[in-house]
Length: 169
Image (cartoon, rainbow, N blue to C red; front, top):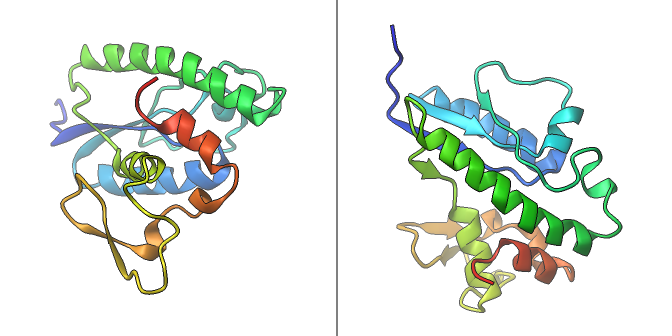
């Protein structure tokens, strides 16, 4: 008997342990509600994972450094540049592959990307002040707690991460 899913969501965790583990836990919870999940870690990160969840579909993408990930790159800037180039290409290939399957991908997690984009453009002022209990993020239907905004956006290296994550050239 074929399983019917409400949707098929593609999850793209940033390739560091602190991002992948929570995304795996989140993905398993969402899948338990009838949504098919495909999680797409990088090939280099997948090689180092101790335990693979058997309940989730896993399809690796390339960051351009398949043997060592960011440790193989000469710098963080070089890593993010190559990840953006190679990752975009391999992600496109994966989306095409999943479009042609019996349960095509029809949603992707983008709320955090929305926060990065609007912070990068200066529309969303970060860090939130102590007065900001809730933050209104354009294009989201609900408010976000100030404590839920990614902490690294106040980091001096954040601009490089914004460059990799923001939309456009």
